[in-house]
Amino acid sequence: MRHKHGYRKLGRTSSHRKALLKNLSIALIASGKIETTLPKAKELQSYFEKLLTKARTNDSMAHRLVFSHLQHKESVKKLVKEIAPKYVGKNGGYTRIIKTRVRTGDAAPMAFIELV
Image (cartoon, helix red, strand yellow):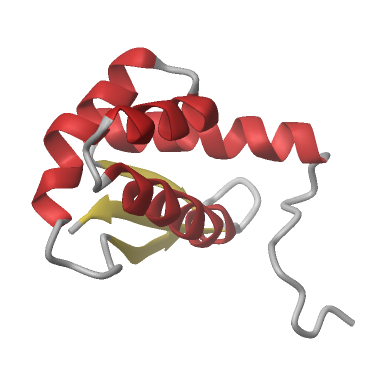
């Protein structure tokens, strides 16, 4: 049983899961809205909102902390300089998940995740 288990494994090793969340975060920063499977979207929401909370301070340490997670200069710059200042007065709830469809190939539930 997985009662009170902290995160979704998504059928991947820890390094693969870390790379997946990093790449999904970079895509979300670049476009503002992405479509993925529902479990990935739910896991990404937790990961991304923690990053955005760190980025809200808008100082050099925020750049370093976010860069240590994402390893992508353009995305870090956009997150800290453009996206994070919009949410300074808001405590959480930076993203929204909208369930969309069932994928035809494997019947996986799909969802959009977007910045609010």
